Length: 379
Image (cartoon, rainbow, N blue to C red; front, top):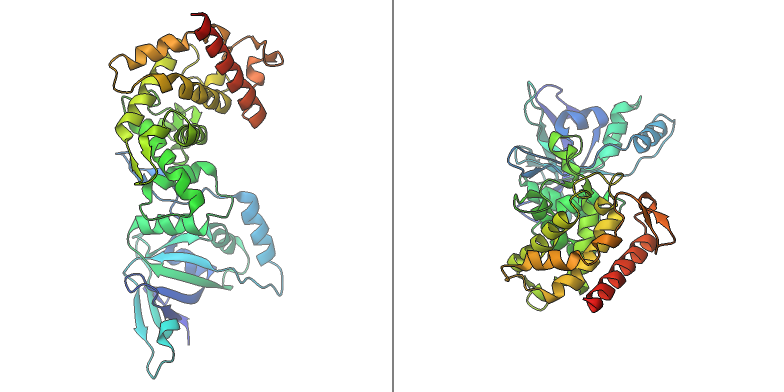
């Protein structure tokens, strides 16, 4: 019969499924109190060296309260399982007697250690963070809930499973953006398409020679000292990079047949162009989006499309690539209204009325391209 020792370990009947001998799966049940005794919520953050740690999203208070309210009702059914990643400290002992169809699960006793004196817990919540918190907030803390768990000490495997489990759910885009570069295994199409732009975005934010150094707002830096200076949404950078890699000036540096990428040339192009942007628009660079629309999603996306046109004619290996980009950008500098004035050619929009919506991104992009081509023709 299943029981809890309370002090040193939780003993529970479980089914082991061996899909992967190195990472066995277990199916069993825990109460909310037991769950929080042995499982941590690994929220995304970075250590002192800038290395990404964790992978969970922040709490969603309304969602948690809704689940709590439901759990407090009588005669409820709560079939949704919580997925855990176990460390290898858990032990499983097969039950005595003959087993049938071992491939599809063998019964046994699972022993889960309970840490003493604030020591590390043996499990991390991969999926079900909100449900776990709701269970601890509800009046029915002994309510049993189904648990699916796999053994994996490696944080990379845990992140991989987290992204797969949540790939069809409305995870915050910024969280996905920051996690993708850390996953090395093959991903679903909708995520793998964004993995390279996400990795480049991370690179731009962490490289000291990058014009975007520590200016990109990330899920892990929210509320931290390093995050206070970050003014550009990482999702805007990723979208800009996605477009350029698919059809713009960065496209020639990807071999879609061999999947090889010339990252060195890509970085040179981005550094040359956006460094030129900082020199042409010094009063607009580095400010918050409410003070400069250049740092806004619409500004980054539209200037990215202008980059595709300008840098198509400039080799990344030219020593004067950035000065050349600066010369080309000055052809449109007088027409830009990043921090004051009105965009006369854009329905007379006031500078801060430009929004990060497809219509405004498109009309601003088209206007900048037309202005650039017109100035280039006259020069």
